[in-house]
Each structure stands twice: as C-alpha cells, then as structure tokens.
Image (tube, rainbow, N blue to C red; front, side):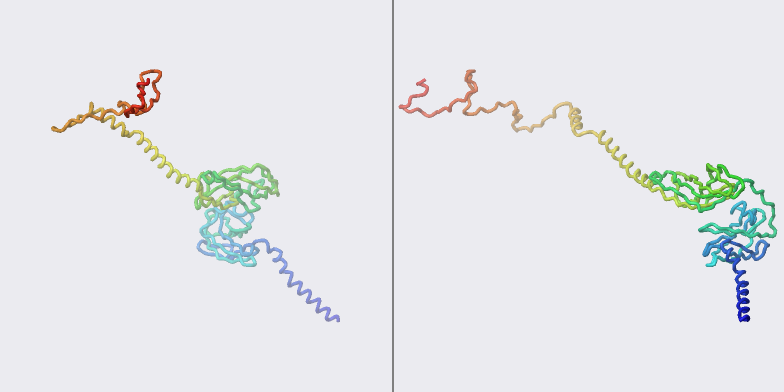
Length: 365
C-alpha cells in the first residue's frame, strides 16, 4: 500500500508543476501586450509584431510613432506617427495576432514605439519600444505636473434636428463622454478643443470650457455643445482635444436640408406666375376700349355723315320718330271735354237706323 501512495503523491506533484506555469498567462489574458521581433530596425526593413490578450475578432491598427514611450504613450497623438505606412490586423478567437510592419521614419524625432490600438468597439492600446536606425532622437518633453485627463468611455452625440434645421438652420448636437483624472492634482474648469471636419478636410477647432472639478482618481461626465454652419450636410467627424492630445473622435452624418430645395422650387414657380399676372393686369388697364374708339372716330369726322341719292329715285323721308307719334284711341273710349265726365267709358254707339216704332234716343232726350 505504501508504494501505491508514493505513486499517487508523485503524480499529484507533477500535475501541480505542469499546471502552475499556465496559471500565470491565464490571469493576464485580459491585458493587451505587444512584442517585436527585433528591438531595432532601419528604414526600408520590416519587423514582425505579435500580440496577445486582446479582444477576440478585434480590428487593430499598427503604427510607428515618435515622441513616445511605453510608460507615457504617444505624447503628440497620431500626428506623431507614420500613418501612411501603418498596417491593420484582426485578432483571432483567442485575442492573438501576428503581422509584418514596414519600418518608416515618423514625422517627429524618437524615442519611438510601435503603437497598437483598437479601431472599433471598446478602446484598448499597447506600445512596444523600437529604435529606428538613422532617425534623430530628442528627449521627451517634461510631463505636465498636476492633473491629467483621459477618456474612460466611448463618446456619443446626443440631440436631434428640428424643423428649422430642415430649412437650413445650423445642426447642433451635444458631445457626451466620461473623463477620469489620472494625475495627482485636481483639474478645475478644463478647456477642451472641439473640432469638426467635413470628409477628408482638416478639422476646425473651437474652444469649449467645462465648468467643474475632477479630483485625482475621480471621473466626471462632460457635455460639450457642437454646432455646424448653416446648411451643412454630409459626413462629419467630431474630435475632442485636451492638452494638445486628441482624446476621442466621433462620426456624425448630417442630412440634407430639403426644405431649402423645396423653397427654391416654389420661388421658381410662384414668382414667374405673379409677374405674368401683374403684367397682364397692366396691359388690360392701359389698352383702349371699343366704345372709346367709336367716340374718337365720330369726333374726328366733324358732323353727320353725308347721304348719297341716285338720280331718278324718289326721296325717302326718314322714318318718323315712334316716340313722337300719338297713342291710338280705343274704339269704345272717347275722351270728353267735360271735366266731370272726362275719363268715363261711353256706351257703344249704334249706327243702325231706328225703327218707326222705336223712338230715337236723341229725340227722347
């Protein structure tokens, strides 16, 4: 029995020894790391960059940057990097990658690093020191004393467009982000720079001051107004800079102000119609009337028009005026000269001869 116990104990020790090295990397799997195939390389060559601990299926950007150090990062931001010679890579299911990177001189002096950062999703980055042979080297600028702000969450634009924006009013949004103070002193009323860039053009920077204090090791929600010019539309990029370093970038798609187009269409239709109606009214007012033309012709003749009579034909008198002719008298109505009997109706007069036996009405009277 003692032999079996020894065998079991030995197997347990061997298993513990085999599993102990694997525990260390597993615990550090969530920390992104970057390694280079060579610590020094010359311009025109290439190095192999490998990494582990990244988010699975994440898109990364590899750049060679100057004025940087692994402990301080890229001091001048991406403007200090050889952006034209950068490379992109996607991590595998375990968060690992390997990519060849051409060596190029950055636009600023070294110390230099290979800067690896995510381009989508949660932000993560890591640096590895690299000596670029033949490139000048200058000491890094002194680290600013006091507080140091960094972005802790993804930025976003809040707000919407109104009816006036549809008719060309300046589009406006609110840039919202969470910053943390990584320094040793509080930051009071920091002044940020908000830039708006249209397409591939350089951003136009405006200063925005945030009222508040961020204590060391604390975080705060920052809201900054962003406004474009009137009638702006298309693809824009909103950038946030603090202390000469770009902290965040956010795309912004601005719709076309179709109300302006509708307005000009109505103007092109209504104005010509109104001008045409006004012109026709003027023409109708100033043109001569037919009656006025007849009166003008009679006045120019100077009197009645002469009549022409052929010889041998009897002369016809003009037709008598119907208005001057007397009205016909009814046969049974005879006006009397006596004022008392004027206007009476007289009895019908009988012109037949009277018989001998019937006395005459006139004799009896």
